[in-house]
Image (cartoon, rainbow, N blue to C red):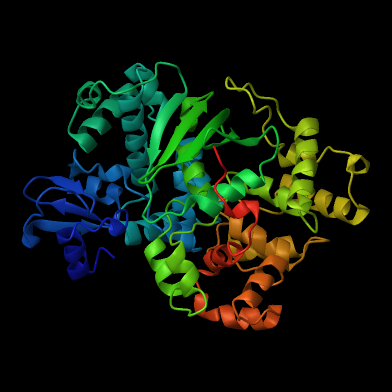
Length: 490
């Protein structure tokens, strides 16, 4: 979008928050870059330059605006929508791959050369993977500086910097303030001195309807791993350097996020996973604009706009849970998952009590005895097949996975049908166009609205909903009076 100067100018002059994260505005006369909705008086058009990423603006020598904090804007919805190399790379960078494994590790995950990845990221985003990761480290550092009392040296390494000197130089370049001045400017607000405990605000594009989003997560919560308590969805997180516990609460203009981490180096990755879980980088204007054009969906969209697709923090976990949920009730699926957790999950300490384990990893589940599973033999075979494929790497469902390849490999496993494939594509792979035409609840909803309700006819009818069919599914499911569609009572 940054190449469409007229459209960018209109967005900046109207302070349109819908475009935050789509592009960044740099001001030649001040040397700063802003989000489109920055509250300051817009500069003259001839003094504006537009960049596709914060990293590109930083590389061009601009520093972040201290009022609108462009680094904290919602991410571009393109990285969740698209399935090409650039989008997959951006999802992996957000998850911290470059900080942990370097650019060669990113290239290995994507199956391309480092040169090809550099070239494509530079062409589309104006910055390579190292610059994009640097911009993310700067944002993580700002969060830790402003919200904790941790020593700067600890913050530097927790944010992913190789040295304190690099940390100081980067903060000065990006924010035009020293780390200590950045902390002083944040004022005397609430901070935590407890290592690993953070209170954050996760932004999103409005509107956001929390009902089916949090309702689904709460109704399907696995005992010991997830719970709904005091207006918050809480769960354990298995992370690269350790584990964490997060509490997420919906607010009118943000998601309140309380993170407790055993290793602060996991902060950026934990935030990225929480954002994916709640689909916070979605573009509701685009989704609802298209779906609202269908006469039968329009009343549902008008009544409760901004529905999101509840996703997952761990794709392998969801694949296992999808198999456990085949042809059984929500309660039965939770029971099966709870047994696996108690038997094979890693115990964790929850200071608030209630959460007891991490969901077991694929390698841990690969050791289970199929005869210990209280389910039909055919489903045992399906579960062990999926677990073996995940543990061996034959099936990869991570944020950088090729969606088409993952679908094909999943469908080739015994006992995996179209419903399971599409559920995994929708919630684990994050495909916004995933569609479950054989789902009984979806077909019933379609029939109530006067739509065709056979799978083949429903697929034909859904062509007009592309590329947002996963969101159409949420609107159709919400017509049923099921707990997954209601925000739980506090």
